[in-house]
Length: 412
Image 1 (cartoon, rainbow, N blue to C red):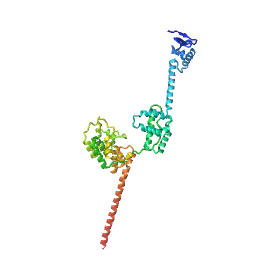
Image 2: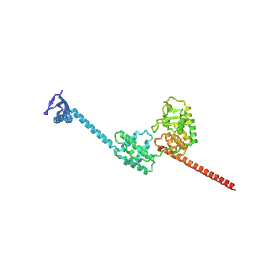
Image 3: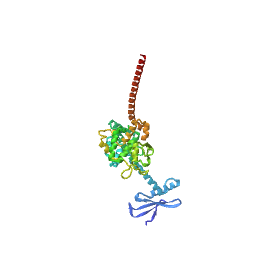
Image 4: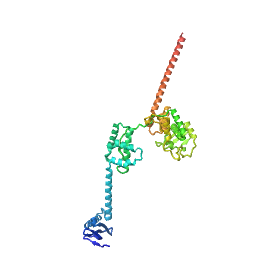
């Protein structure tokens, strides 16, 4: 065991390495000794080969003594090392933060975001839209430097390029998804500025609804293919229910006595009660009811249905209901059954506010899209009124003529 050697500095000593030299001398390991909390304490500093000298050791000892005297700063080497470690950690953290914040949108999108979406069918479409419309505007910018101003430039370029409103929305969705991923990775802290840009609204409301004969033909076709799909379609057509509402429907929500159905898990978040037609009541009456909390419609594993069966789309195709239809808003989908239900209600003279309650719209603006159907009914009513008034006028003229004839006859 090497013995300790005192230096010319009080409280500083060292021991020599048995075999290792530092220059011409044996390497030396320095320590400092002092009192802390009334106890003798000795702590090692390091080797001469690491840059330590007796002078440096003594300077460190004086620093600790001064700190103990003032009550500020580290008072032991352990505390000093802990402080230095924290400072180094803070410096490293800040460096990493600055490195992250210097990442450009292109760098992050191409190297991080896009590879994670390789399994998505939309991957190549997103890449195309990014290359064409997004990268030229914000690709070279640091993510943290991107603002509403830059996104409005993307919007203007796409509008000038006569891109569809839906495509512009898609481009903004791509930016938002990549941004949110970057936020999760702590590259950016604030919300994506896409929310600050007012994009034109997408008119994706269904414009077409089924005529009575079309609906009956479709139901008959579905019944020949799948009883469950037929029942789902029938209920949507005659209650206005969404597919998701039917998928969550349990026997507890069916009351054949008063003919009511309570839909839960609705889009508006509020329960909605509708009343059965005779056909709907008969449909439920022909089923074998399960336990109150059992789902009425399930998949083959007895679990909740997550999507409409592909059989529905095949039926639409085979019946040619969408043949030659280009505009998606005019294509018949399962949701068209709900739209048809509402249109039939309005066509029969039902007040739009009543339709709102039946459909469970949170906003009357959603119901107002059926005003075109109401307008047709009003137009027909006015035509009928005109014909009625005309008949009344003709009858009045005929009655007047008959009265005149009687007067003339009497005067003779």
